[in-house]
Image (cartoon, rainbow, N blue to C red; front, top):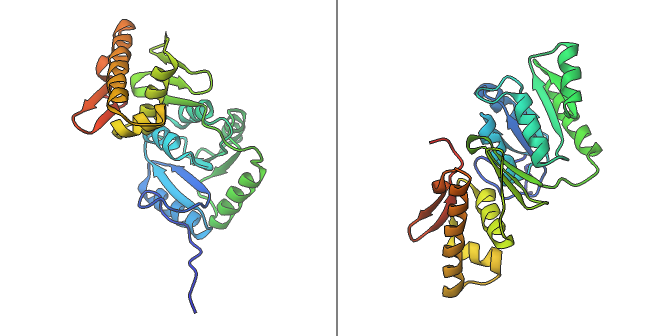
Length: 248
């Protein structure tokens, strides 16, 4: 008789399952471990972020079904992270899990757009049941609508195909936007020349690769025109391009 493992998997180690994904945003590693164990035992897949910047990158890359968010985070606090998440994926459920337990904090969290508020220390079984309840209430599918990169002050509105850098609007052609958004979705990973060609043009050829090279040149020129760093797009020799979204 084969025993079926009902636990979810840790997406920081492997990402192969179709179960609901929960992103844990928490800087205390012991709490991260505990939350992951609770969620995995409840049948969820989990991944984690210990900073706001990492949380936004993983939210863009993995598109979680739900986020557990601590408020007292380093560098970028939970309120700012929540605001960025709402801009990126406005329908993703967010549950605040915080040691700040006053009624004023709870009201502020719910008013800011959180779907639930759990005070620390929490009861393990209650936390998993609240996660399930919030997911049941999330009737509309989530949709990634915006990419936010605080370190370089760049936002991409995927629906309107608009880009702002340091509060300046950057006008792009459709193909330029397609390339930039593809690099942004995969940042900080390298996107191969072949992948850019296949995703933007649907085919790969020497002519298309020359076109990619020229459009990257135009994007860099446009960065310069609004006094942004043209080296935000890096050419990784023989591999492809990457968008540099981290502080240097």
